[in-house]
Image 1: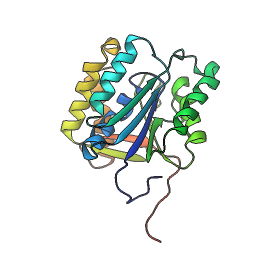
Image 2: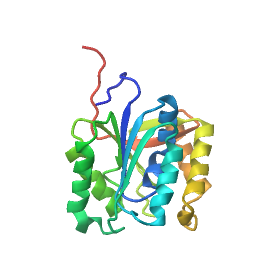
Image 3: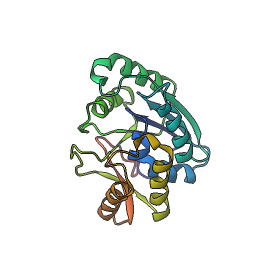
Length: 215
C-alpha cells in the first residue's frame, strides 16, 4: 500500500466502466505520474466497449495519457448501462486483474457515483484490492453527484490543458455530448485547484488510508 511519505508509485491499476472514464477522472494524474516515473507499469481495465471503435479510442488515449509507461490495457464487452445484471462477469474481471497485479495505487470510480455502472464497479474494487490505496475519481455529469473530496492531485496549467486537448483529440465519439467540452473539464479542475491551493487539480475520494509517519 502507498503510505504518506513513501514516494511515487511504481505500479498502478486504473479501472473504468466505460472507455473515457479513466481519462476524464484521472487523466491529469496519469500524465503527471508517468512523467515523474518513467517506465511505471499501468494496468488498465475497462468493462465495456470491447471490439468496437471505442476500444481503439481508449488504446490511443491511454497511450497518450501514460507517456513512457508500461501500459497493459484490457477492454471487455459488457453492455453499457447493464452492469448490475452482469455482476458476475465484472467481478471475475476484477479478480483476474488482481491476481496478476500488485499495484501501489488503484484509480477507480467513486463508490457514491450516481451512475449505476460506475458505482457497481467501484463496489467491487475494495473486495479485490483489500490492502491498497484506492483513489475514487469523479466524472462530471447531469446527475449532479459532485461532492466534497478528500484527496487532490495538483495539476500544472500545462498538464490541465494537455488533458483537455487529449480528451478532445482521442474520443471523437463523445464530442457531441453537451457536457463534453473544454469549459466543463477545466472548470471542475479549477474548482478543485482552489480547494487545494493550486491553479488546477483532480480530486479523489478516499475511504481508507494507512499513514507511515514514523515507527
